[in-house]
Image (tube, rainbow, N blue to C red; front, side):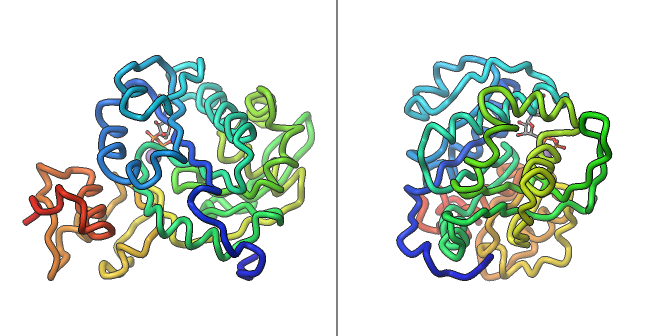
Length: 275
Ligand code: UDP
Ligand code: MN
């Protein structure tokens, strides 16, 4: 699917970004995002959460959406939010939908670069392939097989493909599909796309979830990665062992996102406080 042709001219403004979060993370995980990569895509990014937050809505210029979904880590609440993210995207008319979790650092420039190599007019499902490959499930009593990208590492879907997902995902149907499948939102997206629609996953290794060991990642390529997650084993070592560059200490920057942000955007004003 990487062919380059046809997407010339795709810019950040053609991308609709949604972040799934929960009220309990507004002051912690979300704050780090608001202080870093959110500023690179303020107009394009919407936060889908589960409660009202006036301050958050003021800082994001009204981009915090109370999904009305429950506040737990259970399948139904998480899939409810993903369904709301999908419906929000569909109203936007944009060429790409990218979903991220609130423990993701997104290199916004890198994200646009990767999308520019793809064609939004084709069916594109971009992400990191889950280690649980060729997943098996039951849907309406039948055994079904599918491949999925873990949403914990970020997922992007072209407009053309997103429109085809509508019968299983639109207007509340995403949650129903997820319940019928009995699997989480990332599995449900994979099921709709690779099983129902028979579209393959376009694999990227530039998206990294917190479940991935990053020991093999060359630290000097850190600023070229598109998605990094905190809590990933080794991200602490990688960022702390960097030489020839300033990073924040662990107390100031436990997620390492400020340090990573200063590698990608050294011009950010707070980078002068790194040592
Ligand atoms: N999340 C949520 N409600 C919860 C717990 C988590 O909406 O009660 C969201 C969280 O904000 C994040 C995503 O679900 O965007 C994944 O959560 P987390 O990283 O804690 O766990 P994972 O599923 O990745 O292990
Ligand atoms: Mn996570």
